[in-house]
Image 1 (tube, one colour):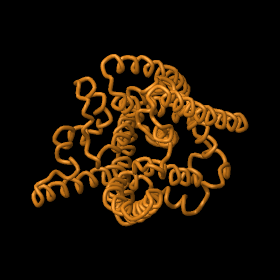
Image 2: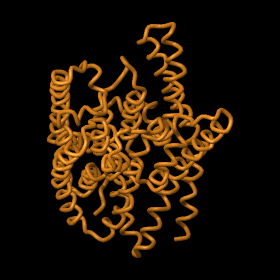
Image 3: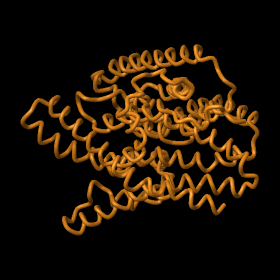
Image 4: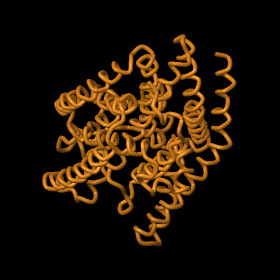
Amino acid sequence: MERKNENKYFEQFDGARGLLAFSIFILHLHFTYIKVPSTLANFTLHSFFVASAYLITTILLRDKQKYVAFGSFFKQFYIKRILRIFPVYFGYIFVVLVLAILHKMILRHDLVGVLTEFKQYGYMLMTFTYNFKDLYCITQGDNSIASSNLFPHLWSISMEEQFYIIIPFLIYFLSVKSLRILSICCIIFFPIIRIVGYEWLKSISDNNLLIGFTMIRSSVFQFDAFFYGILMAVLPPLNLKQIRRLFYLSVGLLIFQDIVNVLMIQSEYNIPAFEMISRYDIYAMNGAARYIDVLLNISCFAFLYLVFNTQNEFPLLLNNRLVEYGKFSFGSYVYQYIFILPSYYLLFKTLEIYLPVFVAELISAIICLVCIIQFSKWSYYRFELKFIKMKDYFLKKI
């Protein structure tokens, strides 16, 4: 089955990638006044997971018709994925390690814990299993949450790579109808896993932050996001009016549950509401982790269905700068912390001595975002595209 829009350029999607990525960067700055709700940041990540599954599924359904032999089908998929992801991902890790080693040799100090983190969990970084680190720590009774500030975001790439391992097999060996049934079953089954998993985690740990990370990052609790994307690719055309209503209803419910959760936590733990909205443990403190991902996935499904099946549903996403930035947002996601850390610990900490905190945060955030954008743009056109273009050379040999 091929979708009519499988070869179209989704301008709105690039705009969405560009806009939503900013929420991740702002969250990771951990400012006092300039911040975003953690729910928005998680909406961004779930959107990337759902969109990735949708795009990969539509491409593989088409390639399934082109490559009769599984070997050829399998090779062409991994050639494209490796050339797109590995240079940036492993290049980033290599550069960070070199800098950390030099820092250790010259200043006799471990640069933001890079060498310690790599010694303990480097095998997870190198095998794309880093998203299981938090679950591993809980099961080992390690509540320290020790982590280098240059690696924590790489968990999401690990989860995507795990999806890339299974998706070629699913597409090649299952019919469209079977894919549809499997996706629906997984969409129903995973929320049950989250409910049981949350209760289990609470029974063996009282560290809400670590429980929150585990629920957010572990594939065991999050893999259904990808099946929403697969389902989107194999469903017959849906009524756009109904999808539009579903989107706004689910977003409304997300906002409502955020307000309720914050008020409940504020009442029980006496934590200021404005502080609570951007904390990572917001879902774990009162059990929202058991249901929040259903709302996130449904809202992402509806949002992306509109993005992929309309031309101008969200006019803001058609902004030329956002669309352009969306093209190289992957690199900016990987590189973000080499700009976030100096922006916070050097620039902001200096500015707050002389300026009001809000002004210092605003200046630091703007400079940080501009640097991320400019560097990732340079990386995309000067480095990443060279590898992306190599795929044609390798595909000719299949």
